[in-house]
Image (tube, rainbow, N blue to C red; front, side, top):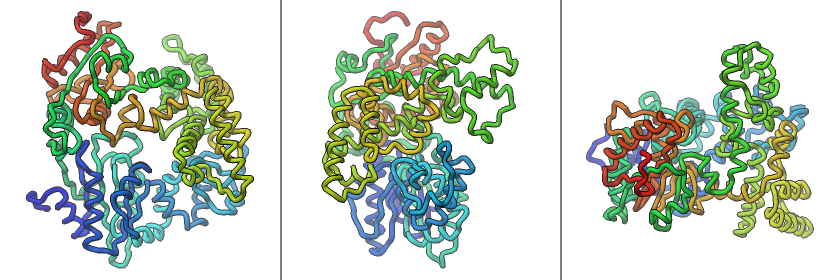
Length: 609
């Protein structure tokens, strides 16, 4: 048992000295990344020849760690790059694994492509997009490959364990659950002639974003020591006392220790029966710049950030798709896990011909018209994920956002990185000239429609490669693609700015993760109580009534970005009495949670409630 007299960082040092796995668990702003660098420094002080792998959540985090500490024996990378570096030298096994996973449905195979070893004559490559025709896999496939290969090939696990003395994983809660399991169940147990490998995890379960990531750590089974870090270097004490500590449901109670700890900040709850333009609200409510409006609903973000038509295209069939899924459950005749080739049209036809009474809730084929030729499993039950979730983007948008990333790199003169993303090697003046011409033509096309950009990419197809997912989706969903082409390309630019960049005044709690802003407005919308987030009991002070951990995480992740001032903006739908009553319940809870003086209606004098 680690002494409680030791500071959190000293407890970690003790774990490292004794080769014990650990979790450094701290809330928002607790300086986990700073501690990670401290731990690296400590390890190299004790053992200058130590081999350390540091796995971060994003490429931006890779840059942060590399800027703070460098050592020839230190490898800093994202989880996907780390795994690829472990797999890439085993090409025979990689080819076998790709073919196996493709045949079992884990990796998508384009229609008409015969999957043979001849496709991989030059080996399996890793790039920004899946292209089996070119022998290339992308980040999604690397996760599947690693999970499969570490289980099938114990030698691979032995090699990985032998390579490192310490593996540190930042934002552990957003690491794929399969990979965390492989570390502790496949890699750690293998015999490597008394060589020990220590795993260090950093993160906060309250800031978990993805459902595919790790759920619960098996502390006893995996022999992980949990160490709590209560400090908060980001926010003033007013934010911590008035929000952070109240909304958490665990043993972490933070204290402000940063430069803003004594700032007389504010935490306010504002409710309204109107969905205001948030920029106007921030002006009217005197929310000072720099500021950030963080939305807990993607629809509101799309409206305010300027990509509503894109969002509506994918969100419109959502309810109908839920009805399809419900009817399939009633039928119990379609095993979609074994019949993954069914199109949505075939599924709808099956339901329509089943004899089930559809009079109460019919399946609206008009709303599904753009998606009918797609595979049912690809459409998903919540189609908006295809435009809002970075890990589940529609291949059309995935390609267009990749193009936006290239444009950004070109603007910033980050040519080597741009070439890496494009997968290009320039060996002649002619190639260089063609590349510049393609990029300049693309810049002009971005002023028009999505069609203009796609046409340009097809004209310069040797530079802007679409990949297998795009090509396959274009075959399956030509009507969807035709519709997208008519939309202004500015919506793609706005989506990119909101989903993948931190600039600007609008974002979601997902895109803001790990960042901080002086003044934050967290936008909550209870217009659809039966859909999405449920705000009931979010602000209750009665532990026995606390519910919906997923929603609590969303609210916490958004609100805890605030350094000085936080406003919770709560939209109240009064179109039905039952909705009004639910809203009143939340507002009453808010008065106890935030204090009556910190709860107000906007605009002042609104008497609807």
